[in-house]
Length: 354
Ligand code: PMV
Image: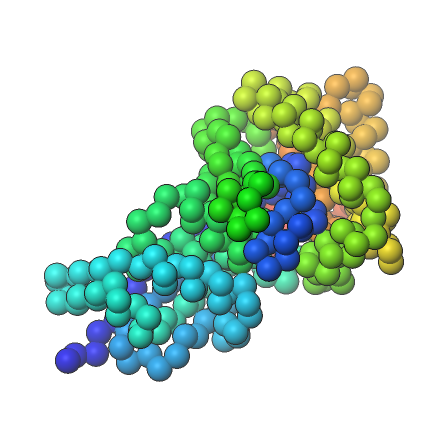
């Protein structure tokens, strides 16, 4: 028998939550305490590209990230591999004369190579894109027939936010009610053409790795923050309905108010955690002030901001005019020679510096 290799390649963008996921009710299955809503970025900017290969000559499963070998032994990679392998189907490649029966997948090993098209050290969420791409591409290679909802539920077990990167456009992760996670899946609210005018700018405040991982931060918040309970039970359910309506009707004013309020409440939960978690820094706070002052002086939101588990600002403008004004303000208040802020323009070809 010849030594053959069969390969598949896929690409997934990262996503930015506008209603945040923070807190698990089940750590092993990654089941959240509330629904969340995100926007998936355009794949030309922040995305992962993954190639998966299978060959009878591979003695073990191995993975490389940006050319460097990383361990696949973590529970999350193993969950995703196991769930995809379980669903593997017969594969035939007539040209290469390869036939893999579905019962043979358990004996074959895979090699996985993944690249991020953005600086990995930039402290920008890369696990969402990476794990979504891992699951999607393995599924392609193994001829998995399950729909995107089912794939999202597998990606969720790799990294919670990854389930939302299975779709483009606006996506909701429904927390679900079941204990087995079968209904904790992502659904698409609107596709990537729905709200084309939006421009997303990511202001890279610090390229250091975050100090508190989202896993341990969430655990501490669930155990100690009274605000988290209130947020999950009372605030988010209502906010999710309003956000769905704002997205459907492309109501930027409502979208921006909800996005900023939710980012601020997420960081308030972090401060309400014992010991407190500080993800934003002085530069993040200055960016919030800049946007709040601008929005107040115009009487209506000109730009929305949101921050994840780190100091970098994600800024969402309703159109190119406001995106341009925002960049002017950022460059004025944070001159590039300060070197404490680099701006990337996402949703457009230009990258400002770096
Ligand atoms: O999926 P994780 O474990 O990387 O957690 C993501 C948490 C936030 O980015 C802060 C919020 C979110 O909904 O993406």
